[in-house]
Length: 338
Image (tube, rainbow, N blue to C red; front, top):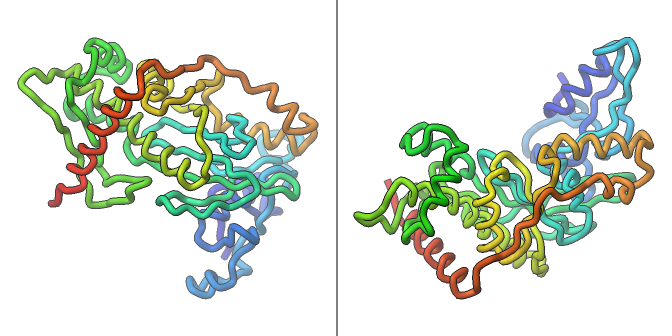
């Protein structure tokens, strides 16, 4: 019996069973890999009673692992880039220097900060992870996950039926100047980073007789931005680096209101690239680098280009007041027990 993650299975199938391997980023998520030595950890294998000879070989993210064997086409194609979803997005965003941060806005939010060749141990409830290994150089990252981001818009559409389609929410949210004190904490599955509280429950606070659908819609979008602030503050505390810009990708980044509000409450630039499918392009960059399509990372940097930059438009006093309201709403969410 052979063990492997999905990339291992794909590599095995594409090479017709000739290569049983994985890369460091996927190996690091199995609870069997030592992220400092980048090898399977014998002690962990003993704890889980997993024999080492069933595990795939751990390799870098950027090398030729093997070739297709009459799969897809008669030509044998090199398989040259493997990385986990969020690590590929970090590379696709060209966050290649320590302190650079990307956030993916999907059903949830996934934020990674490149910490360079040092594995920073988090003291603020974040995950220390391998970012990538290229050649003999390994980069690490801090990661924070938000459980409910775009899913809160789906909830408004499918359960509350405040909107008929997701793309309606921006025009509805901008139909009011603010939320009139309404906050939504979408803790539908508890709260993720940096709280990690599975017992928290969703809450809507600040409702008055004048609360409208537009206020609820705006509060839902703002909740995505506030949760991102929580994670970024934890990253700044762990790394000691003040973030100057956030590179964004994922489906929700088409919402200009959300991106502008994100910049406002973060007090930093939010940069949306021309290509927002950064996971796919990150894997392509790694593969192209491995086969020599690009000579080095500097050559790849020229491929990345920004589509729009959002800059803060509110003052410190308003920013502080908005965030204080969010923290009160989170405390209310945490205090709810079933």
